[in-house]
Length: 300
Image 1 (cartoon, helix red, strand yellow):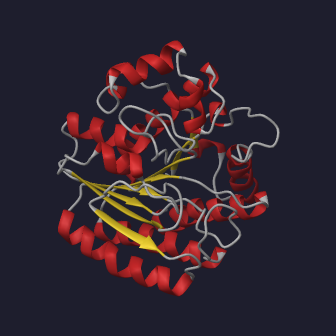
Image 2 (cartoon, rainbow, N blue to C red):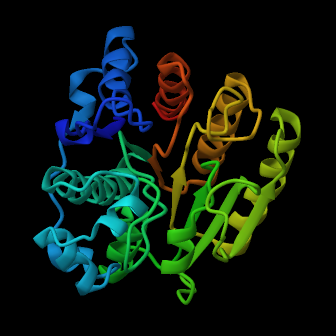
């Protein structure tokens, strides 16, 4: 069964005109249930994560600021969100969904977080709409529990996974691969184990050629026990922040390749949604929905 982490906390209320499209977190599961791709039984609501698990990845001083609400105005601006305790509740729910999805993926092959992909969160601060790094937290928890020996992060959001790269810079058991817009945020990049910077305007053919070449090579190199896949749809040509030019069909082929490759190799696949900032919500929702449709079709 395709298990999908989804919580009402995912849709945090933001000021009118804020560029982060929170509406997608309601619209995606509604569309998938309406069309019959999933049923309500596929959805589950994750609990909040415990502090000890957060501190496997993030430093105590940073967590204390979040917990006590002592984030400065400058630090809040860096995250892109107006700070609130409701936002913190959202942030501590998302990583638990990614952890639970890793366990479900080990059972069923694949699982999807209806949010997540918070790859701009560093050990000691948040950036770019990210407070806590869900993939890093999940990978560290799995390593600490002895459930995996090696993990591969496949980050195909249009923005480099700078926080994930920083967190795992000295961790040989987690290989970080980020394929992103070279001329895009963050303008000061971190160093992943493998970075592929894509030129502005890159389209389907050139993008997919790189992915088709790199992913099998990395699987052979890393021999991962789990793949964390960040499936951002801000690679679309319609995206106002992305600067790449993938069509919706090209984005779907990207997802199909990652999902089918993980299935063929027998590697549990844990998917987090990542970003999407097209002016039309339809473009965002449909591209994200394709990820769920493909996981259902390929695995079940």
